[in-house]
Amino acid sequence: MNGFLARLLTPAMEWLCDIVGQYGLAIIIATVLFRMLLLPFDIMQRKNALRMQALNPKIEEINKRFANDPQKRQQAVAQLQKKSGVNTMSGCLPLLIQLPFFAAFFNAMRTIGYNVTYSMYELVKAGDMAGFEALMERCRFLWVHNVFQPDAMFTINLKAIFGRGASAVVSMIPTAEEAAVAFNALGVTVADYADVMADVIATYNTRTNGLFIIAIIAGIASFLQQKMTPQSAATTGDPAQQSTMKGMMIFMTFFSVYLCATYNAAFGLYWMVTVAFGMIVQFVLRKVYTPERIAKQNGMTTENTFPDRKAKKAAAKEDK
Image (cartoon, rainbow, N blue to C red; front, top):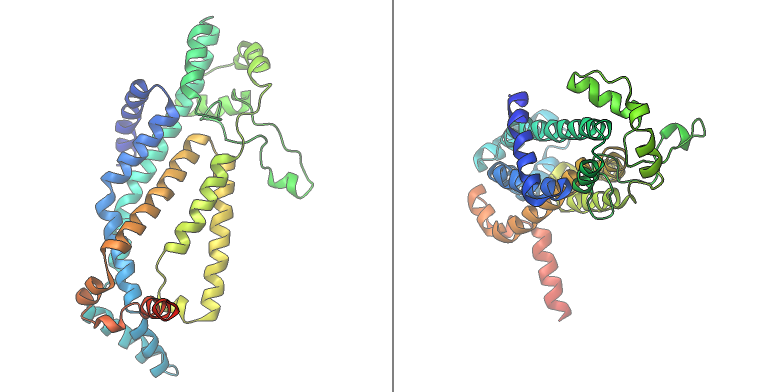
């Protein structure tokens, strides 16, 4: 299924690029359309998380009541969730449905990047420099010279960080080693890439490809998204769990930065837009899917739903 979807998405994204004129802009538009297509599953997953969060006060009561009896505690929590119509597995199902589409979208972007590398080689070998320059213009996006190379000034080499290697400048044109990966994936044999592209590489690779901007934005967006994500009673009431969640938040933030700084800018744009889109959905959902509606669905009273939120409102009124 993944391969079939990727084969459909690849020409569709190429067609979109023909319309807008740039791969970067086409990827942003395609990502938004892609997220809109999967929006019902995304909302289903996020609503389930909010409903789980609404049960936190009662789950905390159960945890205190059966602090010394884990078996009864699990049974009581399961009965509460069943009574409220909340199923922990129902939050995983929408995510599992989305995974093949995510993989297909990723594979489509990768295939397009491989095709672009091969097209560069063919145009230069044919002496069509006007066509090559037009292709480079399609690959440009704002400060990024080639979206199929990382938005970075130099490679982030973990070995170099620990003093066991050297970092290299991120170039606009793929090196022979990078091109070999693309050619192998496409199933074509090219033995003279370095010779054919020598003059072009010498001309274009005098400038670095990016400025780490996509990676920084993605990291900030990832951090903010995690701050907005509802937490269960296990994390809100347990200091050890809270510490673990903070550690995961920091890790995911730096992981997002590292991923977008080391992989090509096309994926970085996709990742950045995906995270930003999720933040917008989460924000709107919190405004529309009110505690009152959640309490009604969970069979709870409004007073027991999101008590921290009510306490903040009461404190704000007292301050006034």
